[in-house]
Structures are given as structure tokens and as C-alpha cells.
Image 1 (cartoon, one colour):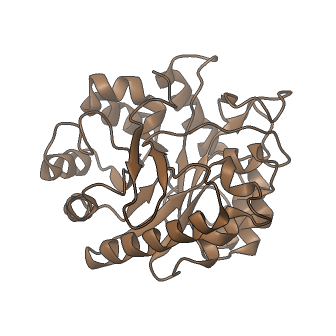
Image 2: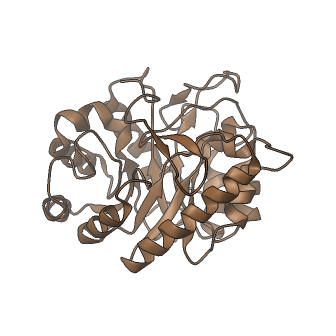
Image 3: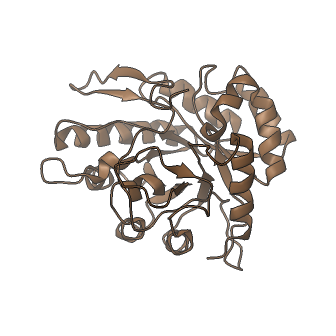
Length: 304
């Protein structure tokens, strides 16, 4: 599967003139960087400076999810993952199961279904109610894409506030997951600044994809410190050594790439990060299952 095409649709926001592709997957990026991070952990941190728990974005195992989502959840638990971040696949958010069935499966496996990426412009009220039934804490906008003007991002910020209100009514939180495009100037401003400054902190949080921040040529620690308390979740995936920032498809097994995770995670913890999710998109070092297992092993020994 091509991750850029998987589950992408074209949706129009009728309140304005914005048209953007929505994907439950991770989108393209371009750039290389200074810091890079991979890790997903639980809401609490170990006093020793390690992650007491961490999770995995299920897109990492997308080909397997399509074939047998139940087996995927069983396997990730065996690797040491205690949390999952779901995504909206071809069988919907719950992979052919009812929300109550998905919840029961996670409970049986002692797996915390923390969050899910989803198409936030279609049936969002229904998705929020179902996510609450599953016991999730977050629904997340995975992608809005580059826009023609900075005003477009201001309008998107208002949509995020509306989604945040819907989530609040259902006992959830709403968040936005970044890619590289929001760290590149549009009309003399950075879209990421606009999204963070024009969303209500009581309604909208942010998920930092460290790989994409690095790929955009930005510093994750600088952004964590710039908006303390706003970054509550993160994606941790490593970036191959020696590749230019223009190389988009460059993720690799954690600890084998160029990102120095320890200082980034230390800063993230200090600024209020709560959830850490492994994500990997390329698999030159083994099968997706083998890579997911290696990623978990790396995080289990990482001290920061």
C-alpha cells in the first residue's frame, strides 16, 4: 500500500472554500534535521527516567490490520506495548467490530485504546460518541495538507475548536497531528503557530510527530518549549542516517537512525507530554512485526 494514497479522500469544508485531502495515514514530508525522536509511552513516567508504558500507532502494521486486526492487537501486547493509537481503515474505525466489541477486546488484552486518527469532517459526532464508548481519550485530525493562504489555517483552527467542543461533550479531547508543511512559512507566518495560537487550549491539544518536525528542518525541543502544555501526545519514529531532508521515505527502526531521542523526550516530559506512540513507515530492516518488536525493545531500555 502507498501510504499517501491509503484512505485519502477529498473533502470540502462548506463553511469556507477549503478543499484538502484527508488521510488516516501519515503523509509525505521532506527534510532532515537536528533532533529526531521515536517513542510512545503511557500517561505516567518512571522515576528512573524511562517510559513506564508506551504505545504504537497501528498504521505501523497497516497491511496486517487489514488482514487480521485481532491478531495485530495480540501481537503488539506480546512485544510490550500497553497502549494503542488507532486509525480509520477500510473497515472503519473499529475494523468490522462494534465499538463495544473493540472495547472488550482491548480490555481482554489489558490494552489501553488511548486515541484514534480519523476523518474529522465526516460524521464526527458519531465517531466521538463511539470513541467514548470504547474508552478512548482522544480523537485526532491526522492531516489537513498545505493551504494556499495563512487565513486558510485560521479557518481550520476554528474547525478544530468546533471538533474540540464535540469531543468535550463526549468526555474526550481533540488533537491535531502535524506533518512538515505546518513548519514552512505561508504568507510570512508559520501555520503551526497559527493553529496553536488560534485554538482554544481548553478544547484542542497537539500531537507532535517528531520525525516530521525534524524533516521540516525544525527543532522539536524548541517547539515543545514554545508551547508548554499544548503537546500532549507524540509520534516517535527514527530517521535514516545520511539522507537529505528532501528524502521523505526515510523512517527506520528506533535507535538505528539519526534522531537523538533522549533530550527530546526529556523536554517533552517537562512540558506536559502524556502519551508516546511508536510509528514506523518503511521496513528495510525486517517485516513490520519484526520492526515493531525491535522498536518496543529500544524504548524499554531508553533512559532520558
